[in-house]
Every structure is written in C-alpha cells, then in structure tokens.
Length: 510
Image (cartoon, rainbow, N blue to C red; front, side):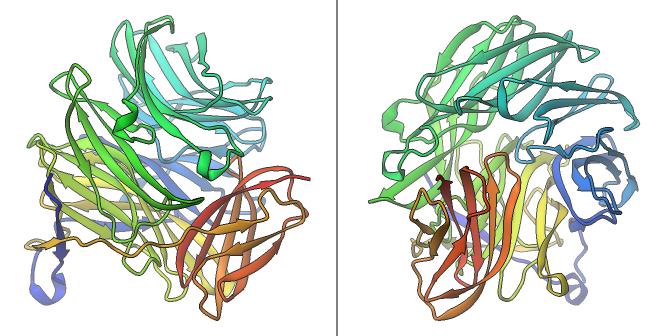
C-alpha cells in the first residue's frame, strides 16, 4: 500500500488569476446556530439538511432542508418544528436524509420525548407528513439511517433500554409512514450501534455496525468489532458476518455496496499503552463478493490523537475510485480540520486535503466533513459543520459548512499537488480524568503541563445533550471541575486549549 499523500499548495485566485472551480461556504441561516447533516444532489439543485434554531426566543431546535444552487447560494429555506415545542435532533454523522421516488425523507428524534421522527417531504421541500414513533421501554434512541424499499421505508439505528443495554433496531413502514414491523437485534454483553443500512433487493436489507463493550468498561478492557448482517423483508436475519479478530478492526461505519458485488467500509485501528488510548486512525477496507479482503487503505494522521482522526462517509468516483470525508487534527494538535481523501480503485492514495472554515488563535478550530457526494463531472461536494468562537459572548457557534472541490481536489484552478512522504508524528496524550467514576468533582489532566493557559470545556450526556460548558484556566495542564449538579450517568468530555483538542469519557456516580 502506498503511503504517499498529496498535499496541496493552493494559489490565491486574486493574485494568480486562476479561476475559482470550487468553494468553501458556511451558513447560519440567520439563527443562533446551524449544523448540516446530509447533502443531496438533485439535478442542478442541492439540498442541505440538518438542525438549526428558531431565530428568536424562546429558541427551539428544528430540522432544516434548504435548497441551494451549484455555487452554494441559498435559494429556499425550509424548517420543520415540533408542534409540542420539543427539540428535533439529527445524527449528523450518518445518512439520515435520502432522496426517494416521490420526494425526500428526513429522520431524527424528538429529544425529550425520546421518540423517533420521520418526515416525508415532497420534491418541492414542502411537508407531506411527519410521523412519530414513541417507545416507553427506552432511555434514548439514535436513528442513523433511512431508506426506501419497493413498498415503503426503513429506519435503523440503536436504542438504549431501561437496563442501559444498547441494541440494533430496524423499523419497516409503509408509504404513509405507518409501521409494518419493528425488529431488535440483541447481542448479550455488548452495546451495539447500527451505522449503515442498504436495500439490496425486495427481500434483502443489509446493515453494518459496531458491537462494543458496555459503558463503564475500563479502557484497558474495552473492545469493539464490526458486524454486517442481512435481513429479509420481514426483518428475519438471513446471514451475518464479522471481520476475523486478527484483522484488528474496531467497528464498521460508512458501509456501501460496490459495483463488483462486494462491500467497502470505514473502520479504525486503535492502540492502547497501559490504560491510555494513544493511537486512533481510520482505515478503509474493500471486500470482494466472498467477503475476503481486496485491499486496505490505512491513514497516517498528522497527530495520533484519540478520536479526532476519523472518516464518516465514502462515495464512489467516476474513475472507479473512492473519496472519504471526515476530520483530522493538524500537526499542531490545535486545529481539527475537515478532511477529504481520494483513493484509487486499487486502494492507493491519490490526494488528500485538510480544510478549515473558522479558527481561533487560542482555541484553535473545530471543523468536520461528514457527508460526501460526487457529481457526474467528478467534482466532489461535502457538507459538515465548523465552529466559530464568538469573543464578545465567550461561546462557540456552529455553522453549516459546504465544500466543493474538483476531481483533482482543487478549489482554485491549477492548484499544484506536491508529493510528500508522511513521517510518524508525535503522539498527543489522551485527556486523563480522575477520579473516574466521580461524584462531586473531577480533575482534568492534559498530560502536557504548560503553565497557566485558557481552555474551553464541554460535557455532553449519553443523550448527546450539552450538560456543561465552561471557560477554564489550566494550571500546569490540570483543572478541577465541580460536577455535583450533574445527574448520574456517563458523559463525553471535550477540552479545547492551546494544547489542542482532547476528549475522554466520565462516569458520574454517587
């Protein structure tokens, strides 16, 4: 496998006279925040979906489905709010928006009611119907896929049960959104995330996902593995496949069928040193029709840091290759950048680029590309989000982000790729949390020292809800945080400082 990555020296169009052939646009749609989920190419139009807020107080989180032209100019704004005032949520790293024969589907959830939501839209973007799927036996629901079948629709994802176990689920609906059946696919002793869902024929639906150790498992004992399985039109399992353990693959994301009857997917290589995660890098695996490996593409990110090197989506290109979208930290460890990687049909690197829409001199950048589509011309479009630090408000604001590049990976005509062998980069220490579990307070340790520096802390609960956001001051890389007001459960902890972006998982227990 070639380990050559192409990095771009982009010429400034104003000084060079080169034509603009792509763009990098951000959007807040006149609201306090916006985060795009998926991009749909529909003839000469683009449709961008995601979540945003109502513009005025009291703010309410709503779905958006906005029409743009091929230059990224907004042509029409469409928002859909819950009539009971709940917050609509989309799993924006997954395929939750699809074009169907009579319009479009948007899938998500009503956050506080813990209900699945399916919105069917006409081709104009107007609402046909919005259906809700309540379930009183769960703590939370994650809808990560929506598909059209010959006689209806599918949604798939994961549900966290009252006993805290997490299972795959698939719901089959008719064309009016009424449920035909729901099946749950339970594996004892694991928490499961269904990440991909495809309709292969009238009697075969194929899903891909991850089975992992339950929450609160010590890091040194954690495990995860991928699974691909097929069900029939009534939801019964037809076959199931898991990668051999010697492949050392952690989960399956972005599963897609290939033209030769095989499959391609994203997975991860994870390396532990003691109880610290020191390396987490995305891998792309191509399987043949017999589920044997054709090739493996492995990245060597600029900084080997935690979960901040990831691909989220893959799309085929007209030349038989593939393009992957995600995020990666740059060499400073401070800037989380949107990533595009072009891969040949044989699994070799063709080019790559890292892009930033917003950044800050102290707090760095957080940019992600999580849905990618390819035009018939070979041009590539990807959507995601970028977060801007608002100085006067001392907060981060999310913007929807849309990026377009040529088949050669250029925004400006005549950009020059330069071959560079990528060397091993220094390891970014994982964020340490102690004690863990914690009840009243927790100490965050970056492991980097560095005197007194400012930092931004965010903690999200297991529902994905922001539970704590605070500006802090690190002293020699450490700070103690009061968590006495937080409910029991697990939280994702994100710390952004001059040392870079670090993350960890905390259990609050009393």
